[in-house]
Length: 425
Image (cartoon, rainbow, N blue to C red; front, side, top):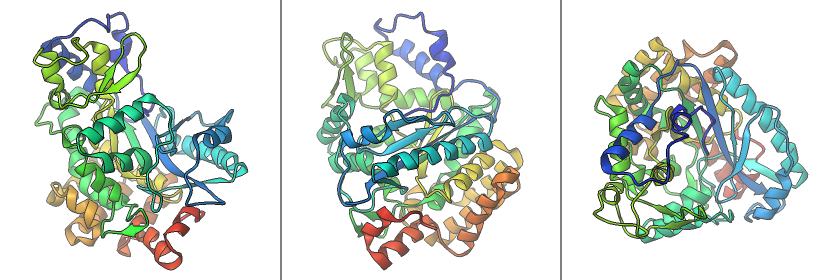
């Protein structure tokens, strides 16, 4: 679910007929225009997903009706939007804040309001990149998620797709695109920092109760899943154009009924370009702007362009850790000096995302890069969040990340104990 950054393209095109057929060139222009919007740096949105746990029966999946009953009518003081993911994960999405301190404060306040409401229903929250024990079960009744599951099954990705939709959770960070003349470097910086940030945030070393020697099962899953829509796109100096090319090449996942809005899966591999060019028809019609908008919601690279930059690469981490993770990530993007230092630290490992997911800071070069990124951030984070980033620096100096905290708990008390632990510290 998207943080509520203003989409100026959508506002300016409100009078356009969104059901008129598109051709390849008009679609390319639209996709590039939607990709990034000039803006000042500073505004931040955060999204935090967590797994919901039945405190009396932690191995059980919580039903949709029970989830709805627990949060129905809940007022969130910080203004976040509360949504439910396919497997019943709960997501808090903040309103846009002027800076990271405001975003963190809003999310903390809303989390503090959410937890007692869940506790009254004997439910709790578990923060990790994937559910460490339970098998994925889709509880959301929406047609979108049923259609997504059918699409991925037809494409040969049923297992990873089930994990993605029903068993994964992330800390998502949304930042402004900034001035146009800085777009290429800004998008390149996020991709450059991906391996150390991914290794740093790794918090999913267990999957369905077992260890497979992977630090972030969530990241590893995304790296396997349907690369045509989930792999990183490469900007080559023109990130908006690269995003348009990525979207045009990606296979169409869902077909929207123009009259009812119902969504059904596209079981054949049809690139959007082929549909636009008339090489292949889907639903016996040509695509429209409304179809392009739906298609964009089915693209899941680790950095997604939505007028702003949507960073989807971090595991969900426990309450002690996510404020510092958000602060340090934003510092090495928005502060020029910190960004330069972090870039230098990350450059030697910038192509090693697979190793970052699998080995994490167990690899000396990746560990060095992660320490360099955190050190760079410490010079730039707001004073109120500096202690939280210092905690990350200390954790790294001990050769550990949140993945180790999960493993400590699982090895001492069993994997199921991870779900009911108040917090991993």
